[in-house]
Structure formats: C-alpha cells, structure tokens
Image (cartoon, rainbow, N blue to C red; front, top):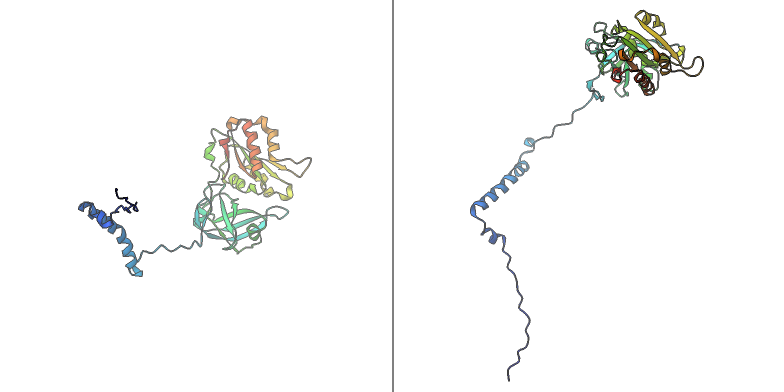
Length: 306
C-alpha cells in the first residue's frame, strides 16, 4: 500500500523590501552626493537663523505712524492749517457763511485753477469736509475765501469759528475746471450751471478772468433770495460779461429748476460753438447735460471740477 500523506499548511511567503541603506547601494555615488548637498543647502539657512543671536536676526520693519498723513482717494498729503480772518453771512438766512482763511505761501501756490477744493477739519479727530475755494487763484494774496454751508459735523464746527481760530486743511486738490477742453476760439459760448453752495467754484471761475472774451450765461438755482449767496455780486458779474439767470424754485408758480430755464433757451443755443461748466447735484447735472446734448453740445465739452 502506498503511504497516505497528510496535507500540511502552506509555507508563509514574504517579499523582501529593500531598506534605505540597501536602496542607497543602488544609487550611483555622484547622484548620492548631489542629493546630500541639496538637502544641506536647503536646511542651512534655517539652521543659521535659529542659532544666530537675537540681535542679529532679520527684523521686520516697524509699522510707521500715519499721523498727519491721509489717503483721500485723490492723493496722499500732509495736513496744514489756515487761520480765520473773517466769518460773515453769505446769505440772508445765515446758513451759508463766507469764510476767509489766511494760508501760507506753499498752500497759496498749490491753488492753480478755479474749481479746486480743500479738505478741512476742526481738529485731529474731525471728519474732513470737502469745500471748494470761492476766490480766484492768486499766489500773492495769501488768502482763500470759502463758501461753507452749515450742517452737522465739520461744516457746522467751521461755521461757528471766529477770527483767529485755526482750521486744519489739505493743500488744494482736484483738477479744477479744465477750460482747455473747450478753447475760446472754437467755443466762444459758455454756459455755467450751479445750484446752492455750488456757486462757490463758479464764482472763482468768473472772477479769475478765464472767461473773458466769451459769451457767458450763468444759470444759478436757489430756493429763494433768502438762500442765495453772492446776490450783491450779480451786477459785478454782469459787468464782466456774464448774463445771470437766477432760477428760484420756491418763488412764483410751480417749482422751476435750472434745467427748466435751459429748455426755454434751448432753441437759441449753437451747440457746435458752446461749452458748459457744471457744479451741483447729480440729478441737475444729468438733466442739464441731456438737454445740452439734445441741442448739439458734445458731452466732452461739459466740464466739471472732478
């Protein structure tokens, strides 16, 4: 009889996995040296930084204080100051004030074009108010005249100041009215539009003499004479060749606005030879430009100070 063999458990099998040392034996010597050198180069700066004395470690630059420096969305500037020479009512109701500031020579030189403005505040913590300059550029005068509308906050604080008080202010800012966009020889007719305190930079433009030689009409909108600044100057403006159309929304029949007065004159406007200067609320400027474009005045000849 043949012997019967009993089944036995299968032998365990294992697959040998090369160790790191074993694998290294298969790397060429030159490659191994390059690998070691690259690892050392990467680790060395960190090792030196950790072992270096505290005084020799690289320091991050300290945060600079921005006291006196402001980013206004227009440019960076250092706050200066102006002292109040006069503060008088500019309209019968007293809500508009004519304020004269004495400024230094550098501040005066920075005012180059009618239509520029300054930021003003009563103290370091005050929120700046943007106020257009109402007097024409004059580097030798050493003063700025401002038209300030009384309101809560900074404007109200400035309206309450008296002669000798000091207000913080930025240098003159903004491009002003770029009348080079409409040379007088090609555009001899100029239409000016302002409402309320927006007359301030228009007054500066009229008094600057820039408009001399043009046929000028001013459409000036206010609620009534009580709320109208510079009414006593209308005759002087007309003597300078500016026809004044004072549009009063609360006097007479239904409310009338500058765009309504413009529509009445529209048929007499030669759009190809006319430019416009506008200061006021967006609703007004949008409505006026629409009328002007309708009579042939190109939009690029509608000049603003921002």
